[in-house]
Length: 576
Image (cartoon, rainbow, N blue to C red; front, top):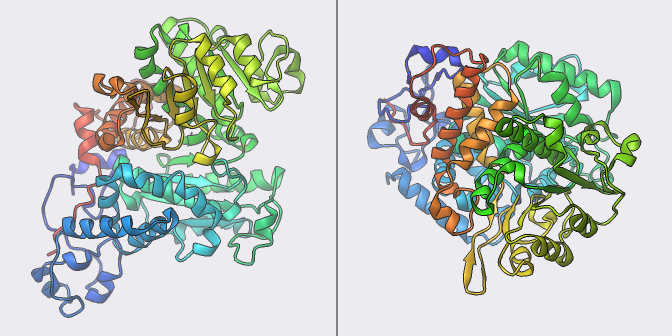
């Protein structure tokens, strides 16, 4: 077993020798019974396809079940990448990758790790959005657990049906607000599946320790309710007490079945439920909301890195948000927290530098009565302003952040107003997928005459303006949550604290080098993501130890090295 017995306390025990990033010792794929070679080839965790050696083919009853050639994993990877590039339609690539994951798990992760920049948009935004919209039609084999209202009262039994005992991360959605695409009900499963494949590829969390879950309480999407291929409950969404009871049973069952240290990541819940669930369970469970906290952490990292280009401190900036939902208010709150950490000023004072615009215009004092509770802290003294461009002129922000979920809101007038106010306006168009982005990279650079610092939620290609090539940054949560999750797991943390999110942001900002700044980048390239994740994990774990929230004792001396040693390696193992 890799890492010695001391790793058990931190919840990183490794039954199959899956981690062993550096150890080449042979393993026995079957620990319970001798199975036929035929079933070995049909088990995605152990299947190596044509890479089984002559010796393995003899030892494991594979002779004759495979053509005579023996290929290396590298050659298999080369062949598959060649095949994937032949597909013109991104959804076909997505389906080919899902098929590979069902057939040969290690090869799937090897492809993802080695070609992360090319494949990330396929397994994650934007293609995963289209996959969720069509999930009923492309559904082949269930991945993860579906817990619907039919399972009420039996959720613990359902969890026991999942074959893995030592689950460390659960990503759960109820499908109500998938990306910027709305209520996709049960078909939202594509999101937890995609997120968890990134936990493994980018954060090195073992595949067997990851569990995707969709909670199906119905859908209000008429199109799905009338679709003969829809895979979920055909009823309107349950709300109120019925919803709360199902979620409560789920949270209790998870803790009972997997213990105190399983990380539960909430994903793509609607605003009202997202805030409530996080508030209700953060003191009793290890919970993390990616849309509120993950987004906030990755955006804050971009802002901290951008200060090198903007000049001044975080507290010197003025922020204007378009969108005051979970992403917008989550980012705003984390910015205010980081300002307090840097200046010692009370958080209420810092909030005054941050303004939010929702569908009714600027959030101001006079609207306080009618505001949802999570918007109230952002209602400042100002006369009402309806239009975004007028809000830009009135507030004079140095940073404009879009989290509205509505495309094309940063118009030419808005970007020009930002450019008139600032030498280097920072514009972050964060809504996903690409079709919902507030503006494109090309628009931001062109309308600001090449002066904008731009980052988006979905990827944009580099753009040449006036002889200079600009590389747009991608404020992608995938920078944060895999490393954050790894840090939580290796420290055996029992709760998530805001200071751990700040530690993740600071760690990511530190990974941006001079060379990156010269290209106008405020995020490091994804090609280094495993190194970045190990650094984030180390900082998050260190903070958990400092706050007394870590249970994996004693604290390892070198946390970066320890994080790297715990990371899953997708290289094939030798079977004896």
